[in-house]
Image 1 (tube, helix red, strand yellow):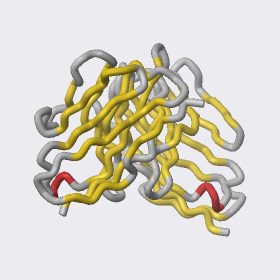
Image 2 (tube, helix red, strand yellow):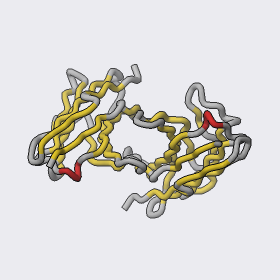
Image 3 (tube, chains in turn green, red):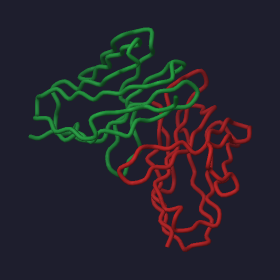
Image 4 (tube, one colour):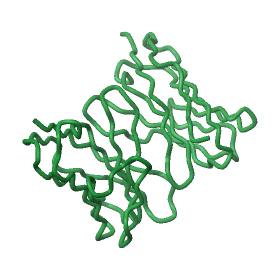
Length: 109
Length: 115
């Protein structure tokens, strides 16, 4: 019940395209769903987060879509740039966070 | 805002040495701090949760006598890897959370290499 499944494992997107990463959770008690971006040798940086009382949240080029009934949420990166190339982790939880396995995103110039 | 500083960034030491890693919240009070371990190209695995002034809560399978955690102030937590061995080599990352907030803010991690 603590698992968070993330897909795809890796993703290649052309510059200017839309990157989409999906996550699914099992524990209905989870009430906080953040996305983190991690560059090699660095700690994860919080990108955007959502709570289950809203279905979508947008901050700049980053959007979270949340489907409570399906227990799924996704990250959309609009107008993807080479500088967005990194590993992205979804997470879910309440007092502690359970992380997905990560998605390596490569944005080609 | 919400800056977390972790030190040192890299440690290389001999087997049997004890290593201390510091995690500081620079611009907020971290009532709760978390310690994670990350293997290459893998996810973050929570090791323990510490609340200021309380004993840490360890995840299943994490040896509390091996990984000593102290959270003596609202801005500082330390992780001491005691009598480290090569299998303890990993990337250790801390995060901190302010009172009443859900967001965890991460440090830049410590690369520990035990020879």
